[in-house]
Length: 368
Image (cartoon, rainbow, N blue to C red; front, side, top):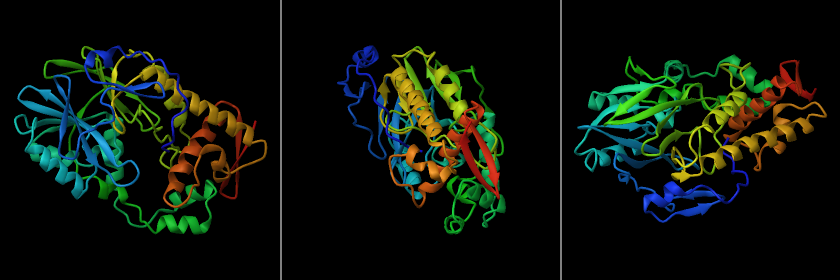
């Protein structure tokens, strides 16, 4: 779930920020070349010669998603699309009449991953501009699967999964009252075909080369886009500056190890240059990729150690919230908190540091 970042060193490589000509501000070692001044709704801010930054409104604490427009000859490629809501549609209509889209309409839609704030308007934009949708296969198949399930009643498998995490029957019934087919409502109908992108693929966009760098853990096959020549990394949710992306164990693959995949992805991303300008999906563009990745890695490692110590006595996932989070978990937070806690407990299992016992459908964990 979204959590405050861990303490960071205070001496990043700011060479790219210095070259940008924009006054930089600092936050826990990261450098924010735009000083926290993001685009207003319906506005696009130029980042270098080929990329524009726009923000679309989101409900809840996040408040926005960053999307990116890349000049592509007489057309524009868009990276991520916002949630399928009237507010996002209105924001897009404002953007259609302003630069750069007024002169270079959308020619392709690229989605970093399947979450609805990223892919929610992709089908709408693809149809409106007769544009092709580009995604990794893992993300495409996942969003197709989830949006095709239109049932209203929560299936028994989902109830059993909540019960395994230690939810009370009252909590299960409260969650079930919200229905099941939420994903289908959050994503506009998708086209029937797409263009697959793969790890290591080099995509030519407007005479520039963008390298596809795949990460996982937050989702199955998240695509980051690296423009090494201009020193830009579109990081999606794989690297965020002030919050940590949710890494959850879920019903679809309950024996998976998403936190292990997340930690492995961090090690891969640490091989990229440190002075890139990182363009994240939430928060502001920043410099300090390695500092942020190390902080994310160390924060999860710290939680694993704390959780391992907490398992001196058998615990359910819900019994571990006090070790995992700095806030009270209630209401809509329960699902995200359970998923992330289960991901950490699963990682301890994989590392041989914990054991799980099923007691009448409830999972109990203890230190190994």
